[in-house]
Length: 300
Image 1 (cartoon, one colour):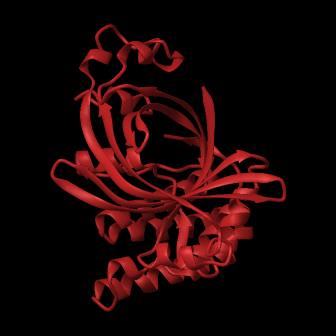
Image 2 (cartoon, helix red, strand yellow):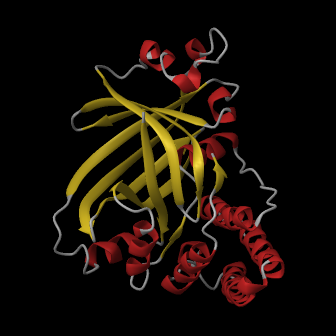
């Protein structure tokens, strides 16, 4: 098993090109790959209920099977267990899967009921940076999640820590946000695919301040995929509550809630497109809020 440590950032419509032009990356070598992924679960959603994600990925070098478990995180940063190994053909290696500790308590026959549930297909551009002794892989993903005849756009940047201090990830994100419309995202591609498959996003019941931050980011993820402004309203409500319960954050949350309210009104009046709501200023506010609430919580 390895421990995946990464920060996920959702990008605005012009974000990918702005990122490629950023001085940190513009002259830096990168690699490109096309990744085709199929996610598996039972019809009843047993893996989702156990907060696991299982996929088969086709790369330019062959097929790879991956199991990921739930972990700790907030503000786009996550740490979760990951088991990954090559397979010779595009079918699940059930024997290998059965040997892994996370599935040892599954009832007999569950693995045999696994079936394809949704797909994620995207182009990945990857850079490797070494900053102050920290080694980071940057993966820009652009493509689609498809489930049940519907699709949503993938447009995200993953900062994966290969070696070094976890704090370097949000610090690197802050170096991009002055020129790139990006924000912390707490929702994995697997969770987005499951929401698309079921036709609904779960509404969270946050209690702790860090849980409120997670609910804000998750609501913004839901809005990006659905376009339903009720999710912006949920994010604004959580921001207002966070400001009341954490007075030191009152100024930050009030300013951010005001920005989101203005964008929501403009969208409802058809003055701006839903993809235009995210700006570098809003992204910077969300990153700043995450920095002020560093506590991690259990996430799926």
